[in-house]
Image (tube, rainbow, N blue to C red; front, side):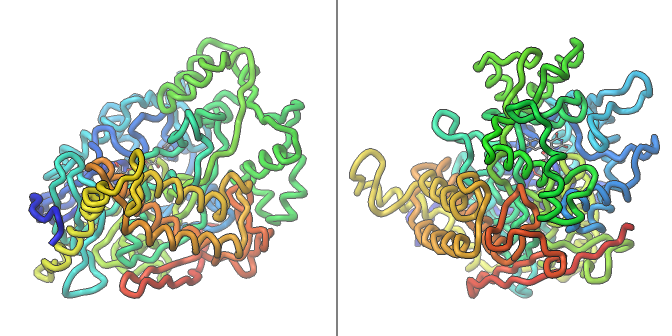
Length: 614
Ligand SMILES: Cc1cc2nc3c(=O)[nH]c(=O)nc-3n(C[C@H](O)[C@H](O)[C@H](O)COP(=O)(O)OP(=O)(O)OC[C@H]3O[C@@H](n4cnc5c(N)ncnc54)[C@H](O)[C@@H]3O)c2cc1C
């Protein structure tokens, strides 16, 4: 019996459990209620859905909108764009499915009160770029959360989900989830017929550039702690493209977005000598990636590659020539508002460094890598596709169901479908919600069962870090250092250092290789052993502990996938020094992994890439 076995337990029975109340989760709750009028739909969220997830701070643009009613773009165009940006490897069925439904989602957002800017001449939404529309988005998340709150039967805020529960009668079927209340420490057991994981992507698995006084600052939300992957991969779900991390060129030190500057305000980036360098590198890029270097627009990874080459050649700093782009008061306001809507810290950096964008250029730099399948990369769970357009081997059940029965996903969780962003993640949540309702209705009496023993084992495991600290603190030698445990922060810093130095982070200029990855995996195994001895001094640190564990499991998948893919497919995201070129003959395929919790083994394989759009 554990030291804390007397803690309160809450058991919640539900038809559909949505884990994570961000964009995917809110979409899932909304649509599950629409189709499942009489079903119980429960949302569980580690923060408060009012201001949680990657959109907590607001956004200045919706990045995925076709504009089909004005004949601006068609879903097929969007698939071609995403495929080009990802060097040929995307799940075209999933992307098409989102693209054909996303406009309806954006129109709902507007109906719910989101102010979308319009072009005074055409009356259409104001475009930032081909796929983006500008919004006054400081309150984007509360507006969307309200719709989810009204749809869900129950919303449980402040519950950190740590594990999925598996069915006792059917080993590959989900049966719910467990977690704890981060405020009062009570234990939560959710027994569910279907589970939709929408728990967000992974920041802070690679060491960030922001250290010292800026420690903790990252581009993707620091609270995106890899649960989307940590939860589903431990349940045995097949994962794909986990090597496909993303690196972003952003304004230096504040991680300010560049989209509005490049696309709407038409600002240009140059090296320190005022040269536009991208075009001059075309031949070099072709020698690395062949025909993909001729894609229009140039894939994001190759744009990063160009920046990195310039910096290596001593031609940095790279700067955005903001002063040439601002010639009206309105443009100046757009420039500042872009930051104030979603990255206030960048405005603070400018103010603290005496930068007036009307007068002088601003530095750009590439970020540390992140893993999230809703943005411009394809990492995540392998999911069944839409019945009407997915190839046969991409379908084994309900739309957006992973390879675990009853386990669905949306947003960052689902792999293969990059460029979903906020609107696409909500749309994918809706698709998953609708399919989960059908799944639950078809279950009839064949319900999942949860054994008491499984719950008790997980409860002891979840709270053990509190016991480790309560006992180990008596051995403290100095400050907070004790020989029998490590703190969650120490564990996180070790993880970031391992990933950075061996997995292709900033300190090696994103370079890695088989020997480096092998060494990284060796060190990660040692870190995993030490995680059993982590000490949490309070509930906040207990949450940090479980976030760290999700990050470590995800990181292991990232290293294993990176090792498995023997090519450099996305120069600018990472480089394999031992396989420096793209190799379509061998690697025009998805990398896939499956973790077996019983044996602790990882099984790697390739999955085919089918092109369904010409
Ligand atoms: C800096 C930045 C800029 C962006 N810019 C744009 C933009 O301009 N336009 C655009 O359209 N999109 C943009 N995006 C992308 C967009 O925010 C994401 O694509 C979208 O939020 C992904 O949805 P999701 O549901 O997968 O994750 P999220 O919205 O992050 O939701 C995940 C939810 O799960 C919760 N959670 C996590 N772990 C657990 C757990 N263990 N237990 C319980 N709950 C948990 C989180 O608290 C969160 O509420 C941006 C993102 C960032 C970070």
